Image (cartoon, rainbow, N blue to C red; front, side, top):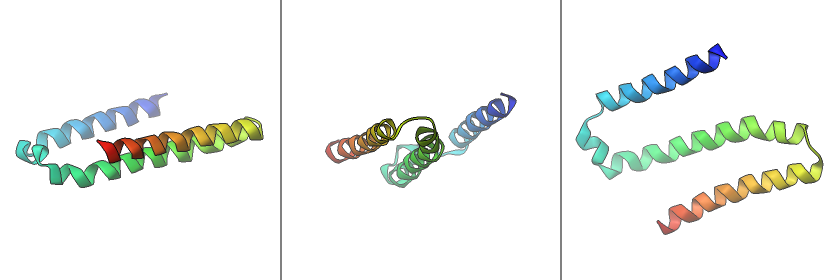
Length: 86
C-alpha cells in the first residue's frame, strides 16, 4: 500500500514539475504534443497489457480468456478509429 502511495505521489509531482517548467506557448503548439501523446498512450497500453493479460490467462477458462483479450483488442481498435476520424 505504501509503495502505491509513493508511485502516485511520484506521478503527481512529475506532472506538476513538467507543467511548471514547460513554456505555455509550447503547450499550445500542436507539433510538440503530436509526438508526446503517442508515446504516452503506448506506455499506458503496454503497462495495461503486461499486467492484465497474465492475470486473465491464469484465473479463468480458455473461452473467458479469449473473450477478455478480444475485448482488449476491440478497445484498442476503437481508439484507432477515433483517432482516424477525429
